[in-house]
Length: 298
Length: 206
Image (cartoon, rainbow over all chains, first blue to last red; front, side, top):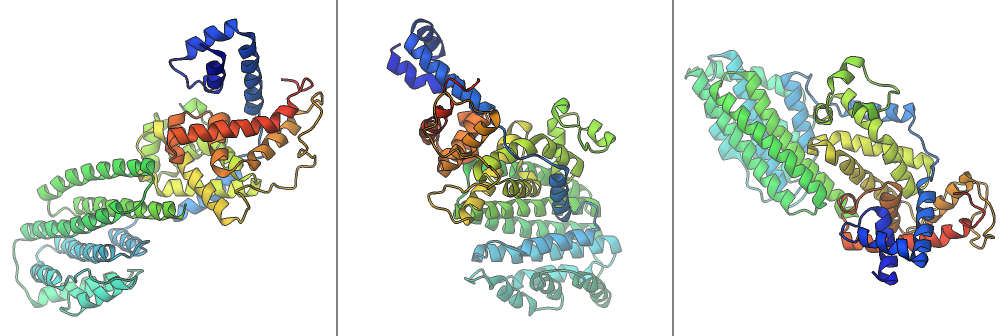
């Protein structure tokens, strides 16, 4: 090995990054005073740098500040079912991107959640499932086309959703009201009243199962749109890889809980878990959108 | 693994004892377990705040940005899988937080002004080589030299030399290609040498 070659590699050698040439450099250094001196100086500098002490410290106050903020972000595990859905929807509607596809996704998700909530209420009530079957198709026809081009698009579309039937009041109120709060609880008794009025009793379990499947389809359509939206964005490859792994994890969970729900269609807990997993997927896709917005600013 | 974690302000004994592995710690943190997240904080807060301080050179700002880093990490925990990548992932978030801060602060040449709490003058690079410097003064020299680097070089230099990251890890954290980071590192080293070498004369104890 020549001196020029050795000198050029000294820094990498010190960094421990050399694999093939390390032994050659050892050999050269043991026989070359000039390169040894270069090595020695580089080593001293490195040692000096590694003794660098900064004027910062991790204090209890730092953790206290982090803790105070994360408490506000605390996930929904201990909340009631309705609070859980409410928070998920409020979360979803604070969207960083209001592309037409995203807006359409929001509406579809809202429709899907409506169906799921009414299903849950039905499965609790037992025999009062009647007009929810009627509700689902009318929700389908009311689904608007994703044509709007601006940030107000989701509001415009939900206006269309609201007009057709009474039952769409639930979907409408979900999508317009960003807080998505007590409206839902008020609508629950309203739905039950409609159910009593139209008294048509089908088999509870089959209907609930069908409705869950429809809700799933809505969620999946929404997720599809979100995924396409995210694919178009710029995202740090390392960060994207992390998200892809998280999504794979969630997909597995979705697959497993879907089986459980199909086997136990009347089980509100399983339903909650499944919809939670879908919602989590939406969250992850949203987070990807958020991260890519940040990347764009770089 | 658990021995490496600071015992200061440790979460409740039961929670700590149950976390037998990093995977479990991360899994729990992902579900919003604050005790688990606190363990992550205790393990990584120091390297993260050090890295951010290397980038922004202001103590208060470094604390604020470290806080922001961990809050973002908490919110994005579901994107994480295993312990081997936790550190790299956290550094990636810290990198973004630091860069955002640097870009919102109006500076020339991406260089940074330092706090005024250093008393001694270190701008003169023609110091006599036999002057003996205390460790404390050398810290100031290094800090100023880092601040004088442009952002990309400063980032690569601090990750490689001060945080001992591999090229692959640095590439993951920064998003730079390995050829670019090697080039930046080489130039950063040359600049740092130029600034530090005058203080490494015969008088400086190593």
